Length: 487
Image 1: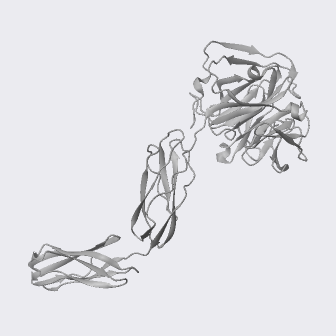
Image 2 (image 1 turned 90 degrees about the vertical axis):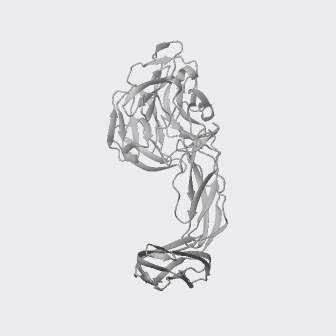
Image 3 (image 1 turned 60 degrees about the horizontal axis):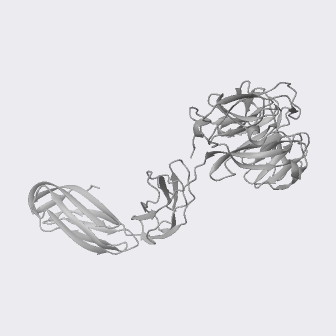
């Protein structure tokens, strides 16, 4: 579930304005200006609790590290003044380095769930890379130079795009061909950026773009743009205040590092060490547990509804709804929300004989869906099919043909012949008969005497189904005339 960032930096004591001083330059930064930022003291550290900090300079022996990205399994760290890409596992253990022919001086990285993207800050291109196979997939020619790079999954109608810029140049949203879709003018000077459509901030619609600012001097901080309004939200946090002297590097946002909390991470180009870090940002919705295997009958016949029951729990106690997969290509609609740990029943009838696997899944009130449950197998055989045929009148009686068109005998067929109007005697006759597979019987009414127009209704019913035929007629003392037709 999306949790509001707690109190958006509840400044319990005071806000102070800190200005950075001229110091370590951020690789080839040459704008020659200092950066200022506002830092509010927050006595409640949530959401800025650390999930991890890892030293990436000591194991690599490289002080020229700038960008970082996480794919759910590995961290990849880039060398801004060389071609090396360094790989670390989730616990921060150094694995090794590699290069990709044609790619060098990578800065900030972005990840779309399949490929990584980045530029060198010096040219108008984005490299699309498969870091698992250590290959260059393609080169996207862009309308602007690319240093910071964040993947926006909502851009271009869901096709995805990239927020890019160099230092304090306008942030541009590019589509996958490199064309400009949108602009944020005059951002603070930044090195890395990251797109966030998970966490929420009171008063803003989101999604958000986090930026890592402070590209010269000795201090750096994270700030936030609301992409709906393309304005800064006022959310800011001093990374150098937590980790010591340093300037901004790459930035990333992921829900893959911790199952309970979204992570905003980055690389601080610190003195004396380059560190990668991850902050706990907001609580993630945990989907319901996989529901129990549906309980219900193991066999049945066509045309009869059978009831199945399942149940689940939600780790956060959210209300849940259920859906059944009936195994015949049809699914139930999502049920209404109900408390978790409450059994839920749903019924279904199969039209065709066969063996079917019934499964269930659950969805919580925040849209998190469970996996499908294990399957309950039910075997359906062809059932009896009752059908009312010709209905005829005559002397004193009405006769009706009742057929069984199914391949299974119809046992205990309950039938009735009734007359409304016209009849004085013999208004209703009922009976029970068995009809063999593909057989028929003749149902005959009791003695009928009367006068006038009538409506003759014949019904036949078995547990699996029923049929009814209604016909107009006329009673003339002991002679009953039934008009053909009806349905």
